[in-house]
Length: 617
Ligand SMILES: Cc1cc2nc3c(=O)[nH]c(=O)nc-3n(C[C@H](O)[C@H](O)[C@H](O)COP(=O)(O)OP(=O)(O)OC[C@H]3O[C@@H](n4cnc5c(N)ncnc54)[C@H](O)[C@@H]3O)c2cc1C
Ligand SMILES: [Zn+2]
Image 1 (cartoon, helix red, strand yellow):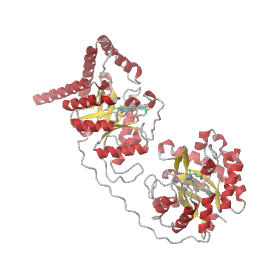
Image 2 (cartoon, protein in one colour; image 1 turned 30 degrees about the vertical axis):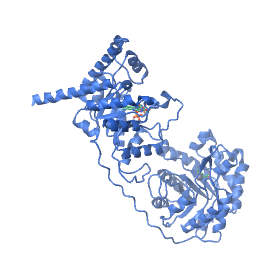
Image 3 (tube, helix red, strand yellow; image 1 turned 90 degrees about the horizontal axis):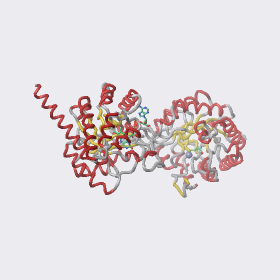
Image 4 (spheres, helix red, strand yellow; image 1 turned 90 degrees about the vertical axis):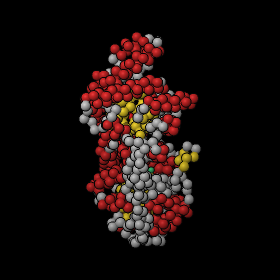
């Protein structure tokens, strides 16, 4: 008889956590490896759950797959670890308890970390080993990524007729990570052949019960839950869970009311939790009807507020446009000079001030604070750079919401310079998202939807710039990246500085068919030293011999070097002006008088162009 037959009329109890229980016993390494090195520990856990009343236990194979075992250099032991796990569970189970083989999800929120091909290969290897052993069924558990569980469930269903439990982990109450409502998710898993569908990990009973309230009983599949004992907290560097068996007994009754027939536990649960739940439902049969709370109607998303400015991508398509980078200062007493610079640039008539996000990976006054102050003091439009280096997925989303609340809708989405090159080389770099992902995320915000598909209540109206690095060996490849960024939603590009007219022409020829405008970067040189540094140490940038000679000739005469730098920049602007509408001036070392002069130069050229056009007419 299969446990599916028993579930027709009974509520069955499953086991609780394996990993956290071993951890609480002092094991702090690969849990699955214990099947080989300390089988008695694993056996003891199994036996303790059976004694507590579990009818179904799972093998100690949650992370016994190639991807996870290779983190410990154990990838060559996959077969042994899985085989031994089944033997141990069977030894504990005897004839009275069912043994199911567990296989854990691999992806978290970051799809790009593991391609579907890798996931399929990884899953198949473990699946074939487990199916070769004498197990009563399979449990797929802790799947945050709905695409992943659908993929592996289909593989498993093709390979076996044994019962399959498909457990997802919730992103939030009633919703999966990609925004799929739980009821729809369960329906899909049932259609793909799961015999039991359910929830495990991430949340304790509270969120799971609430999530099940609008899930109807399914046509064929039974429902399962494996809640965590509580939300965890950090205590002395360790994740700890609260433990209250009475609460679990009450929760088991509520799970039953929601139509659940298989009840176990996940992280933080112990044999005491399982015992309490088993006792609570011992003489109760499963419910066969359930009143479903109606689906919460989706929160309506109000449309975006009227944008304060015309988007730069529209402006630059109609006329020449100048944006200027003025980096927030590295020292607190630099703010006044920064704001004076902002005022001077505003008077020069720039279209926007761009503010780097800790460029060169060194801390500066936060660019949102600096941008808001520039907006307040100089009525300047601030364009905020956002790197993926300093903020995780939580921080990035909260940052975007904050920018929206402040009415800052011009952003540049970038990867960010590696922390290795900055003031704190050992600082962690987050990179939860790539620049492509960040661009897509911001565009999703413009639809009023968060990363996980949840409503933000309002649409944002970000205009998204992306970075263009033409200083690479293969310009065509860099342009392919731009096309990919456009597909992700980039509205326009801002380039790294260019230092030769020929290169500007090359860039024009290579990008002329691109469907998004480009602001060409011009960064004035300030001294021969500065020129030599850029030439020799900034990857990808090479200055022409004549530029280096001109700067060298200026020698230590600061004013002469400054004038030479401005003259070189003007000649580059001459070329760029004829081919591109957008010019992005980078202020060197807060010397804003230089970028003010160059802005005036561009405006003068525009005036002359307009006059020539009138004369022509
Ligand atoms: C206009 C502008 C503003 C910037 N502002 C900041 C800032 O405020 N703060 C900061 O820290 N950094 C800033 N940077 C630097 C930027 O984050 C890095 O230069 C980044 O590596 C390149 O831009 P991205 O973030 O769009 O990279 P992506 O295009 O996402 O590239 C990411 C990775 O791919 C590599 N790559 C890119 N193109 C190619 C190619 N053709 N072939 C092979 N590999 C490639 C890159 O080296 C990088 O490692 C800025 C750059 C630009 C152009
Ligand atoms: Zn868990």
